[in-house]
Length: 298
Image (cartoon, rainbow, N blue to C red; front, side, top):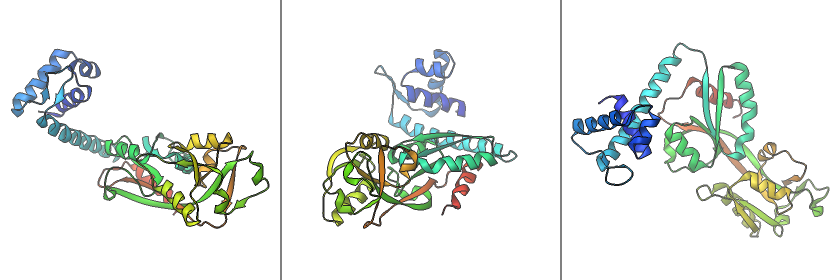
C-alpha cells in the first residue's frame, strides 16, 4: 500500500462513490475500483459498506481514514519544509479571522508584503468553531480572534500570542437625536434603548462579557435582536434599529457616517485578542514571519 492508494481511498471516502471520485482523480472507474480491492485484500479487511447508493466507511475504513489523513498531512508538511530550506519567502499564506478582528490585518499585510512581495494571502472569515476546524484540516495556518478561542478542540492544542486588549465602546445610530453632541455615556443610558446582541451557538464569551457588564450596572439590556454577524448588526444600527456594545477596533472595519461610537465612562472592560496556531504542527516560514510581525504590538 502506497501514498497514491491512500489518496485514492480518501477521495472515495469523501465522495461516497467511485464514479465521482474517479472524475476528481482524472482516472477511469475500473482502475480505481481495482485499487480499492487490492487495498482490502492486502489489509484483509472490508473498508467500505457498498450496500447502499453511497459507499460508507466500515469501522476499519474509518480507522484507515484517520491514519491516512495524518500520513498525507505529514508528507505534505515535510515536502513544504524541505522546499523552504533553500528558498526565500514565497507562496500563499492562509489565515483565518473573526470579523471583529479584520481591522488588525490590513496594516500587517501591507508591511509584510513590502518586505516579502512574493508571498500572497488567502483569508477565511468565520466564528471560532469554523476556524478551529480549518486549523485542524490545515486549510489555514493562523487565526486572529477574540480570546478565549472557543473551538471544539481543547485549549492546550493551540499556541497563542496575545495582542493588545481592545476596549469596548457603545455604537448607536447617528439619527438618534437624544445623543446629539455626545461623545461619552454611562452604562445606564443604554438600559432603555433597543439593544442588538452579537451571539452565535458556539461562541458566547464576548456576549457574556457585555451582558455581565450591563448587570453589574443594575439592568438587563432590552435585546430586540440576536445575530451572529457583525456586519448585519452594523447595518441594523445604521438603519436606526438599535444600539450595541462592540470592541473599539470593529469600527475601523466599518467606516460610516450613519453610526456613532461613544466612549463608556463608567465601564473599563476589554476584549482580549490573539493570534494563534496549532501546537506541534509545522508552520511555514511565511507563517512564522507573519507571527513575528505582530510581536511589536504586544
